[in-house]
Image 1 (spheres, rainbow, N blue to C red):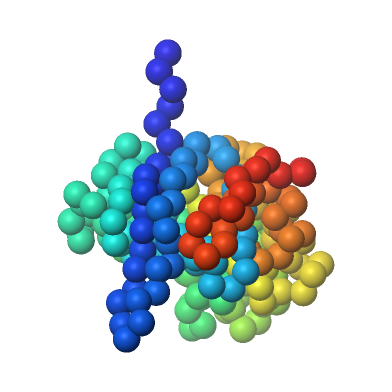
Image 2: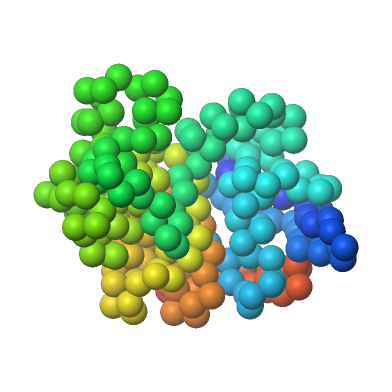
Length: 231
């Protein structure tokens, strides 16, 4: 039986930011991420970890090199196709939550489904199910400013999961949380991974890195180490 196609396959990926001084943020990255992996990307400020996440999330194009997502060459996908790919196959979790303050938790979770034109009743059912998955069905009607930071991040995770994406990308998901709440969010991501989701976490926190099954250390735009985690 042939080996499954990786969710992500990067080959010789470079990213250069032009300006008065060129910044080489990524320098020849080769990386495969298999379905069902839990990977932490770590490194000091300026190491390229956020740029790598933006490339993997199709938020930024590599300057050179090749990126295949589920076997599809991302470079050959037009703007509308990339928007669909981001909306349907990638779930994003950000440090700042990125929730709309005037919408309830369930309405925030519905947003990716709204962009896809999913009927209202189905949107609501799927959003409630996603909130239940992160333990927040009882807070569905609350606005973000009536929720704790940990609850808001759980809503963000529920929103990332509502489309059943091939990949969940979390950028510093514990960065705005205290250590106890941050540990709870990582435990949630571990559970989601255990349910079969592919999870990639960008973090500067060694405690988060130790919880992942695989850890990628970046330095100066290059992969310094790619090792199994200690969990």
